[in-house]
Length: 188
Image 1 (tube, one colour):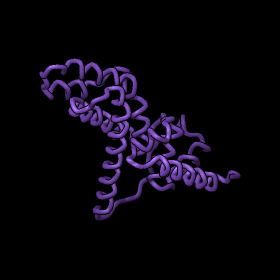
Image 2 (cartoon, helix red, strand yellow):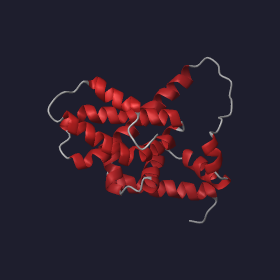
Image 3 (cartoon, one colour):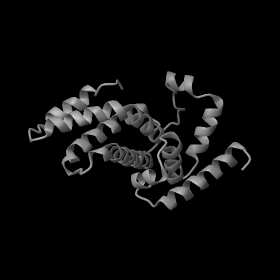
């Protein structure tokens, strides 16, 4: 993704045909949000989907959904947090659909996933171990840890994004870290 809004997003906004009062301001806000948050949202979605193309598509869909509901947003400063929640929910739906299609396949030949060139450069052996240990955690623990340590969100922001209590966030983070330490053979 580039630093400017992708053609598909701009086209979708244009096709939405919103000519109401404030439509231009909402588009500008959306483009500013894309420039500020787009890359980090794609990285976040990439972690949950393990597919760069799907991550980019899901983030674009999140921006379109945010645009459609912007008139209902009372505090525009919360738009970025709302956008993260949309991305997380879209990733969940994407993964759920993927699991359903796997269950319904008659037969499939297991082929090892092909890493993209960037993955080969970025993922060292230790990073691969950490990612594998992270993927072995429960979905909720993985979500909490990624949002806490990768996205640098506070417990209250994570709780709002996932729709759970801050105490649940603390519990999932603590248990997830314990599991990671055990899986990686590190002292407690």
